[in-house]
Amino acid sequence: MAFERELQEALAAARRAGEYVRREYETFVPIPDAPASISTHVDHGAQELILNHLRAAFPDHSLVAEEKTPALSGTPVGADSVWVVDPIDGTRGFAMKNGEFSVMVGLTVGGRPVVGVVLEPVSGRATYAAAGSGCWIADIGREPQRCRVSTRGSLAESTLVQSWSRLGRPPKPVVVALQPGRVVETYSAGLKLAIVARGEAELYVNDYANFHDWDVCAGHVLVEEAGGKVTLFDGSPMTYGGSGPKSRRGMISSNGLVHVEAILRLSTL
Image (cartoon, rainbow, N blue to C red):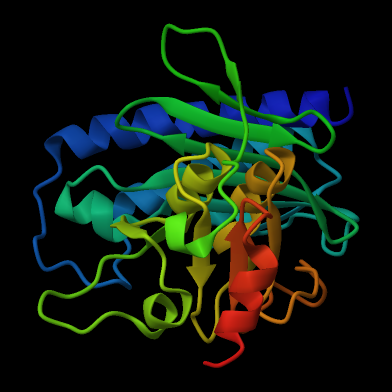
């Protein structure tokens, strides 16, 4: 299959980092009021493991990642193939020790995402995909299973997955606009995108004013290979790379069946 080697190396890198993260997690002292911007030594250590693995396997590829670590220095710049890494997506969940975080490894070619791995270190579950080869779930000790987005076609019957809301706050504007049948909350954009890809929710909407390639690249591949759709708020395609990790306004990922209706409702925000 296309990108088979790249996918296997991405899985190997993610699992190596995931084992390190899991060991550190076991002894990490919880920080109940951890800020959203928190970064830990575990983020840095996991990123070095991933980048060094990918650098050895694909020395001609470019690397971009969330943390500033030594492995980023001296790597090729401007290559057509770019690895996009978030060593711990949802570090707040790691620091609070609620299990809601993931290791994300993605690959873009010509600005298009083609490989994605979202690994959950606590459970060991990996949701992964390569362009043209579908989306798969691999749980520890079980054979990989192919996954698909859900078949619900109504927002009123849909589940929206979003970040945690503060207690006592009114519903977020996205919830008010979409009026989904159900809302579930978790940290980690990677987990949210994997949840949509696995058919456990119909929608994830990222309405941050700015976010980076590593926040969504790996999960983007999962959703599309599972039969779903990922676009900007106006329905235009997501693009990656250019002069550096881009920031953009708004992203909608869905099972595809509720996508147009979601875009129309979110246009009022």
